[in-house]
Amino acid sequence: MQNLIFLGAGILILLIFFFSIVVIRLRSMRDEINLDWYNLLDKLQYRQDLVPNLIETVRTFVDKNEMMKYNELINNVIDIRAKAARMELPGSEKIVIEHNLSKLIEKVFALGENHEDLRQSTNFLELKKEFSDIRNGIEILVVNYNNKVRKHNRVRKMPYNFLPAVLLGYKKKKIFDFE
Image 1 (cartoon, rainbow, N blue to C red):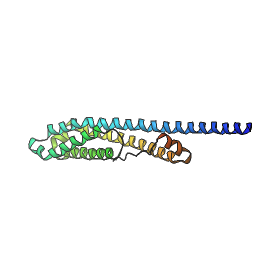
Image 2 (image 1 turned 180 degrees about the vertical axis):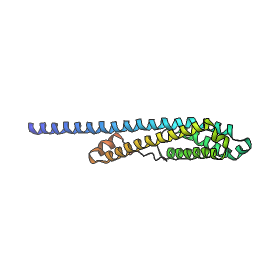
Image 3 (image 1 turned 135 degrees about the vertical axis):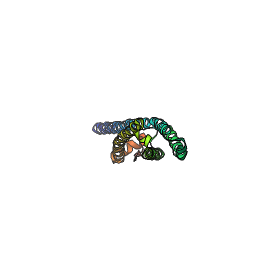
Image 4 (image 1 turned 90 degrees about the vertical axis):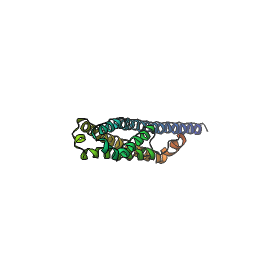
C-alpha cells in the first residue's frame, strides 16, 4: 500500500513537472511573439510618422492647380494613416489598413514620375529611399513574426501541450500577412 502511495506521488510530481515545462515553453513562445509584434509595430509607427513629411513634400512641389486632382488621394492617405495609428493589436483589420496605407504611399510616390520638380527634390528622393528601407525592414519583421506564430500554433495543438494551453487560455494567434 505504501508503495502505491509513493508511486502515485511520484507520478503526480512528474505530471506537475511536465505541466510546468509545457507552461514555461508556451509562455516563452508567447513572450517572443509579443516582442516581435511590438518591434513590427514600432516599424509601422515609424512609417506612419513619415507620412506627413511625404505629404508636405508633395504639396510643396506640386502646382496648386494640379494638387486639386490629388486631394482625394492625399486625404485618403491621411485618413488611413490615422486609422492605422489607432490600432495596436494584430488582427485582420490591422492587416487590411496597413495594406491600404502601403498602396496609397506607393501611389503618392508614383506622383513623382509625373512631376519633374518633385522627382528631382532631394527631400522626396530621401523619403523614397527611407520608405523603401522601412518596407524591407517590415518584411523581415513580418517573416520573423509569422514564423514564430506558426510555430506557436503548431506547438499549441500538440496533444501534450493542448490541455495546458487551453487551461491557461493560450489561443491560436493570427499571422500578419503583409505585402
